[in-house]
Image (cartoon, rainbow, N blue to C red; front, side, top):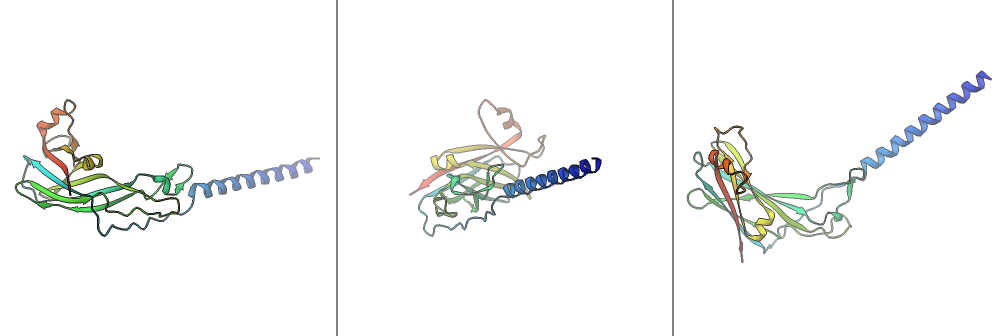
Length: 205
């Protein structure tokens, strides 16, 4: 009787281990999900929706070495992108960035051009056409080799509005390389330890 019980116990343990292993394998397969490759994003050879981005720097702490930047596009209807992680529901490759070239126009004023229709809307994964929209333009202010990052929200680009960024001076504590959006009545005190970077947009027809 003892031997029979021992044999049954071993079989039960083996069955449990097999079930656990199968569950782990199934969970691993689900969590890994299908392999999703980056979309083959193509540029529109003749974009028409041009916006002029102007960066005006008010009272910088030192001479500006250069201003560079980038524009970010996001897929607005991300159901056209497959889920890479079914458990977390994560979709990859829904953003695309491009550099923005700023040219100097006068004292502490820089201008660059971006296009709302720079990227082609295409059916990358067979799940429908992916539509791109501008989600933001960044401007990197280079002062003596130290960069600070200001931004213009994508909605402001399309609506031709301006955004005031407060960039902390070197002596301010805590120091930060990311400028903050000025909101009247909320962060007025920041103006005492910061210089302003005003970024605006204008549609060019």
